[in-house]
Length: 134
Image (cartoon, rainbow, N blue to C red):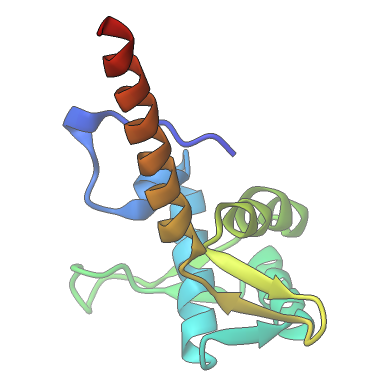
């Protein structure tokens, strides 16, 4: 997955950096909240049930910052697209880990570690370029 961002217009929300549409951002947040509410990990069955509930439009949200009198919104997202556009990119970026032995999806900090590694790679390249002048 490719992440494109503008240094001078960096959004405050990590989901706006990673995902290209507002609907993807909402679904990703719902997924992470669902995993967090279940002790930081869920099994394949729970993930499948979550994807099915999304597909059938059974997940209801009340957007934060809005009046309690405003209507709740039903979220619907295609099951196949959930796996292709939400879960798989989150796994490949290191936001979520999947343990093949326990068959559990877990929240992960690998994204942060990889971003630090990318920054260090840039510093090495920058140092190499500075040494060429001399």
